[in-house]
Each structure stands twice: as structure tokens, then as C-alpha cells.
Image (tube, rainbow, N blue to C red; front, top):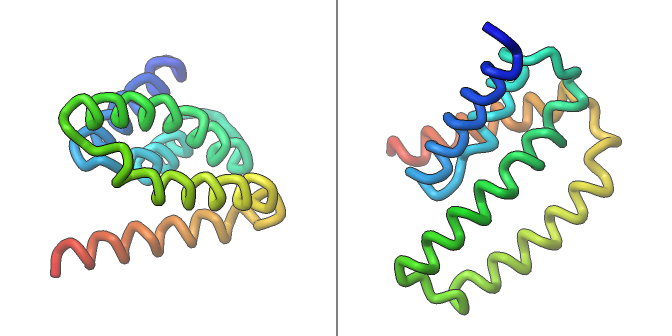
Length: 116
């Protein structure tokens, strides 16, 4: 299977997860991009962010159209903007191995939290 086809499937799965659960597309996309493409580890996280951004915008538009009061989401949007800028400016200093481990811990924590 061509790499572009694998990447397209990974993007579709990330979009489906994000659309169904309102988040989590990046948690699916990072491992899929690592396995399905020839991207270097240090490229996977920025590519994931660039793919997730439009997915989140679409999810936001659909949610607002479905009755989500934008004013309720605004404090979270401002916080995530600050966190995203901070991570974008400093993330390249963190070894990729630790980013993968951190993502793994977040996935496990989230899974356990939702199961209990």
C-alpha cells in the first residue's frame, strides 16, 4: 500500500475519533503516522498538530451549529491557545522519546479514567 494511502487512512481514523469523542484524534494519529509513514520521529508530532487543527475547526463548527454556546468554550480556547504557543515554542527541546512516553501516559490515564 502506498504511503499516501496509509497517511490518508490514518487521517480518516483520526477525524473519526475526533468527531465521535470530541477529542483524541492526535492520540490516534501519532502512533498511526509513526507506523504508516516514513516520517522521522521528530516530524510526527508537528505533522499531527497540522492535521488535527482543521479537524478541530470542523468539529467546532459542527458543535456550534448543534447548539454549543461559544461563550462556554471561550475560556478553554484561550487556555489551549496559551498552552499551544508554549508547547510550540519549547516542544522541540524535549527528546522525542519523552514525548512518546508522555503521550503514552496520557492515553493510559485517559483510558483508565473513562473505564472507572
